[in-house]
Image (cartoon, rainbow, N blue to C red; front, top):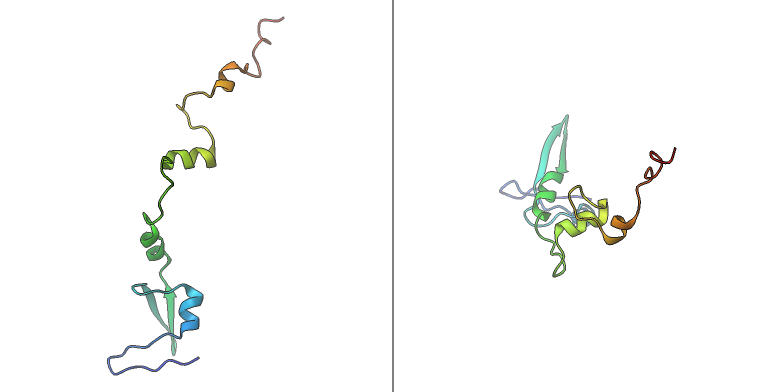
Length: 97
């Protein structure tokens, strides 16, 4: 693939390259020189920052709901009814001697 340097020093990256890296308007690239080569790297931190806040949760669902789904009950969460009725694993052993 080739790219031509324009009068103002700009180049257009081939569409296949942009598509493969997910480059869109405004994407920040890091430019490095290595010997006689120019190396362009996609700034991953920038991509994460731009994606933050763009996804909407379904109505009535909170981020706490999602985190509980992924991680389980958090300390301080109220116990579910089945957890209240269930005896601890070591209950009854200490006084049954």
